[in-house]
Image 1: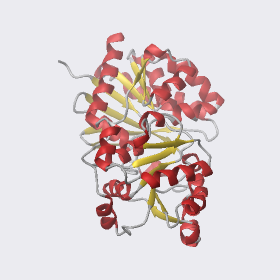
Image 2 (image 1 turned 180 degrees about the vertical axis):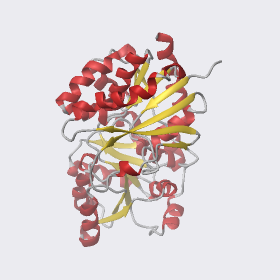
Image 3 (image 1 turned 135 degrees about the horizontal axis):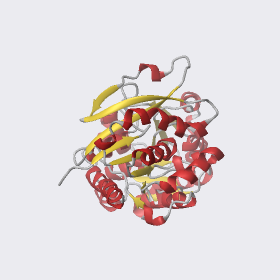
Image 4 (image 1 turned 120 degrees about the horizontal axis):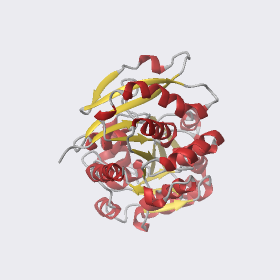
Length: 390
């Protein structure tokens, strides 16, 4: 059988400037590259500003055997409504002579990448699949001009892929017919995230082995619920004295996390500002937890929750996006409303009380986390379906 030839357009991909960016797309597309011929265009907004990283990008590199082209395109601050057409305008000249090299275009992130892919597909005569991740349908449509373009262009894609069932409803609200939508969950590399012993993980990280610990892994930002978790710590300490909440990651709220970690009252709960860690340390931090926490305001299907389940840890998260699809049994954790530190503290306390009652092996088994190969197979099926429809 002839291998499918796929052109991927996505801002969610690593580069020489940010080698650790968007690991979920890297892993899924790398696995897809074993089953199809894949080329990646990674568009980067060209911003003239002090310290702008876009000027340090190489034009081309090979990542996991995939040809990746980092392409700069102009953006005007405050006018995101122009981004899709600007991106399509930059890419079209370089693709006109190569349109016979591809069978399908995959735009990974609805705006501007997916909308630009739809514009390109119309001109090049190629089917287009748009992969939606979460914030592209949950937050981007809050900009009226971007929403109008999503409503106009997203339904014109040959097929739309969503990473959760909940995101399907967001796509339908933008006018995409249900029959055009496929759900493709992201996967987890269980070789990187195997079931781990809590005590051993803490010893490797140089952590105390006897206290209770909650771990958060991710971007430290308001919409990720960082401030909500910080506000929950004193309330949690009243219920579980001596508990530690470790924040693994970096972001705009790192200063607030560090301030509480350095100047907080131990009697009111301890925060630990871990910062960004190496990729091979992330599974160890998850395994070091008694309970993993993700207090986001919106999500598609966050991989960190899948990864925490894979290593065998219960989860407290918010009832947003696809999280009810991941935390679908009481043995896997519990969900709370977003932006509610008191409810978050109560749920964390309740989970800490039972965290060690079920073995990590049993938690991992119940979670039924897909592998990256299964994820790539489902994405390939959606791409092939788009080609056949065309």
